[in-house]
Length: 258
Image (cartoon, rainbow, N blue to C red; front, top):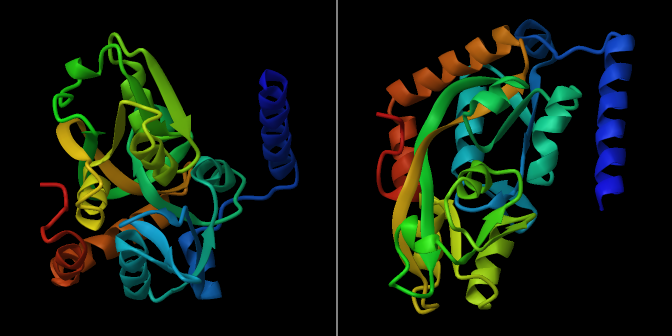
């Protein structure tokens, strides 16, 4: 598997080098406006933020991006793919923007440019054993998280974790908990809220929120015109009441960063 990882990294570096050599660059806001269409990528596997209802993409972030794009005078061409590939594809200019519940971190900010955050949340502990609630309770336990998430990085730093199992999709991590293959699952607190509401008899228990983060869309590193244009339109959506209505629809509360 290590050799496969080296090969994948080599391919990504080669693709990036070819893009530079060929003069391929991220589209500016003016170029996108001339086209009238913005290409936006998401995962489509992270309810209630982005998921499929039959063949149609739905969720809070999908609906919010549509509202923001409308303010910008644009239509969206959606792309859906694995979470791990989203920021890599952005760096290769395969799409203009990614909105998929990416927490803002220093490490990610070295590779992409973030817009203003569109909600604040945090990583919450979920277990089948109500005695396991806090980060300290995770010592000696097997914990499930999704690959490529800030939850994975945060859980890594907790002292005494017996084992961390990461999964391609957050729903896979939840299934591991329900199947008894792990002791705990750490994910977004709003994903926890939905999971417990949709399966009230499954026996899951919500524990503590063990860290808090700002969530934002991302564009290619240095694409300041697009980041500023998107952030301006997002602020307008937040000011005109449509953000509050959308947030209430999905969460029953206003999830913007206070």
